[in-house]
Amino acid sequence: MDNIVVVVVTLFVLVIFFIVVITRVYGTASHFLEGKILFVVAHPDDECMFFAPAILTASQNNPTYLLCLCNGDYYGQGNVREKEFYKSCSTLGVTREQAILISDPALQDGPGIQWEVEDIQRHLLQVITDHKIETIISFDNWGVSGHQNHIAINTCLRQLLQQSKLPGDVKLVLSLESIGILRKYSSIFDILISFNQQYCVLSNVRDFIKAQVAMRAHTSQLLWFRILYVIFSRYMIINTFKPLYNYNL
Image (cartoon, rainbow, N blue to C red; front, side):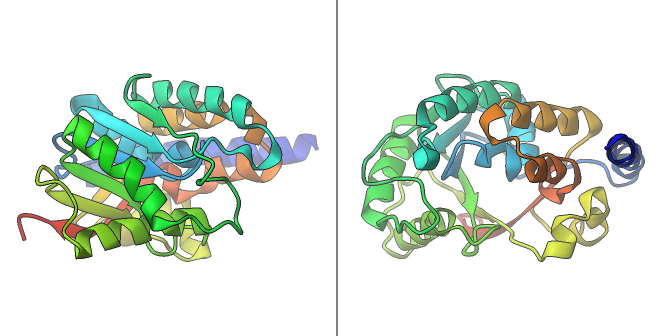
C-alpha cells in the first residue's frame, strides 16, 4: 500500500510539473468565456469532475451561474450531496446565490432514468430568463461518460435551438467534447491534441489545485477510482467545447 501511495504522489507531482511547463509554452487563453455564463450539469460533482477548468476561468471575471438539475439522491444521499455541491461551487468561484440546485420529482438521479426534455426546459428557461444568460455550457450528445441524464441536457438544448425557444440574450451555446478513454486519462498531455481547437480552456497550477479541492468537498463520492480520476483525468485540467450555436457565425 505504501508503494502505491508513493507512486500516486510521484505521478501527481509530475502532473504539476508538466502543467507549469506546458502553460508557459501554450498559455491559458479562453477569450470566449465572456458575459453572463451558465453551466448546466446533471448531478452534484459534475461541476468539478468535468467542467472545473472552464468554471474556474469564467468565474474570475464574469457573472457565472451553475444549474444542477438534481441532488444526486440515487443512493439516498441527496441531503448530503446538496451540501457538498454548494461547498464545491464556493471553491470554484460560484457563489451560493449563483449555484442553483433543482429538486424535482420528475428529474431523479439514475443512469437508467430517462429525463423528459420538457421537464429540463422548464427549469433551464427560467434560469436563463431570470439572469439574462448570454453563454450556456453543458454536455455533448455522449455526455462524457454516456450517462443518460447528461445526454438528456444536450437533447434539451438542441431542441430549444431547433425550435428557436432560447431567449435573445443567448449568443453562444457550447457542448463539452467527449473523448476516448486514452485521451480522457492522458492528463495534461492531451493539450498536444486539444490546444489547436477554437474553444479550449487550459488550467494553470493554481486552478488545477482548486479543482482537486473542489472535488474533495464531495466526501460521499470519494471512492478510490474517483481519486485516481481527479488526478489523471484531462477534464480536471483541460476543457474543449464544440459550438451548438454562435450568434456571431
